[in-house]
Length: 148
Image 1: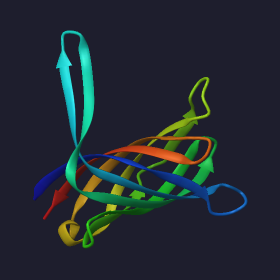
Image 2: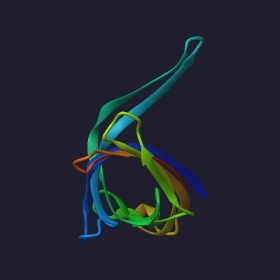
Image 3: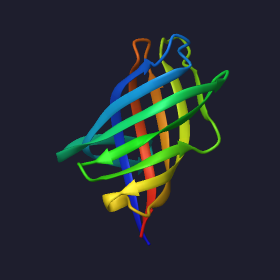
Image 4: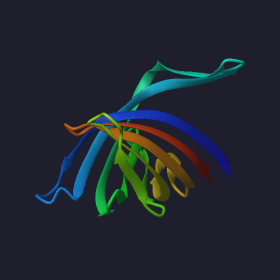
């Protein structure tokens, strides 16, 4: 198997699917980019630079399962024919950011099926994200995927 690693920043929205606001529909896009991490004697510095190319699309359904916990399932697509579906491993976590109207969370997903380049793929994706008061989502995803 071949190992594929990706790191993308998805930006979009999370909107309630019902009146309880326990189920959210998330939709976001991530343009092609290059991530750099530089370690030095003064610590670490990082940057993200845009690259020419297309954008990845992310859609999911988030269901609250308790105080600060959730499950999520969805799809990530790269171009028209390539993508995978995923489900939460364990539970995702969401908490308050002090002195802010932003919430911060993290979750791990497992690939459940794939199409195109991802047919037969396995792997895990981590999502470290923020959600603003108006439903704005910024999601830093890192995937380690094994392709047949």
